[in-house]
Each structure stands twice: as C-alpha cells, then as structure tokens.
Image 1 (tube, rainbow, N blue to C red):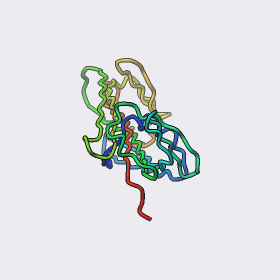
Image 2 (cartoon, helix red, strand yellow):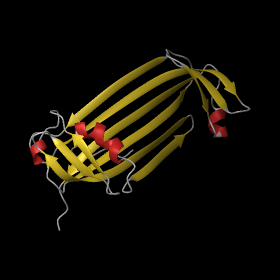
Image 3 (cartoon, one colour):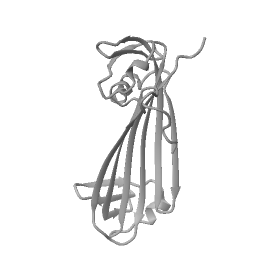
Image 4 (cartoon, rainbow, N blue to C red):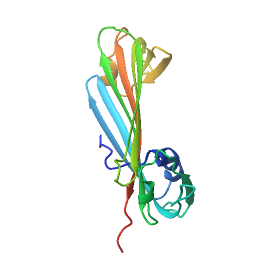
Length: 197
C-alpha cells in the first residue's frame, strides 16, 4: 500500500473528507495482492480543495472543491500551526481503506483487537495530521458451502457469511480452520502552499 505522506490536518480530516470526497478532482487507486490462502485489497482516494477564505477569530476555513462548491470547516484547538494557513493553499485529503485476509490451519482463540493512531504536524510545520484505525479479527470457519462458495465465519462478537469467488482459494479452506482478517482505515489531510502563478 502507498504510505500516507506529508503533514496532515487532524481536525480537517474528519470534517473535510466527506465534504469534498465526491468532487470532480477525486482520484482513486485500487491495489490488490493474492497468495495461496491469503488476499489483500485496498483503495486510496485522494481529493483536494482550495482555501478561499479564513476567519482567524472563529478558526473557520472556507474550502472550494473542483466543482466550485464551498464548505466551511471549523479548525478546532487541536489544529496546530493554524496561523500558517493562507488563502490559496491546497488542502489534500487522502482516504485509505484496506483489508487483508489470511487462512490459518488449526484452531486458536477467537479474538478481536482494535487500535487507533493519530499524528499531527510538528510545531512550525504546515498544519497537518492523520487518523488511522485498525481492527483485526480471528474467526473460526464453522461451515463451508461448496455450491455457493460461501464460508461461515464465527468471530468473537458475531457470525458472518463470506463468499470466496476464487475456486482455488475456496478449496484451501476447511471447517475447523481459522481466518485472520484485518481492516484498516485512515484519513489524512495535508496543506500544500498555493501554486505559484
């Protein structure tokens, strides 16, 4: 997966990403990998908006997307280096979603582990930040339906059905095996200086 690079704005990430995610300037990159008994799929969506106005007293930034739609975003006190923002600067939002699945032979403890990490710009740098969450689940394979190529997986909190479209991958799984699945989601916002004219 491509690492999310650069300084990123934590407060804007949560608010600005949905506001500008559907703009015409959005770019998506889908990556995938597969090995026997394992698979990974991920997507990074990157979009940008331009700062058109800043109310420094109220800490409100007005963003204009590629379609010309404007959105006001409040940059809370956790946004470090707010005074460095300038009209014309670009806000670049990257949203990553990825899932990896790996077959484990034998049985162990079913579990679910969640973690969240965040980072923000260093003092003196352009405002920025990143928020990422990761959930890893180990589930038991309790049923295998060859007709529909569906696995029934029982995790620590619920039971789900998972269709495996690849017959070679499906043939590797048996009742009593375990599957480890990790879902990662990250939102990053970077501030880039206004383009030179």
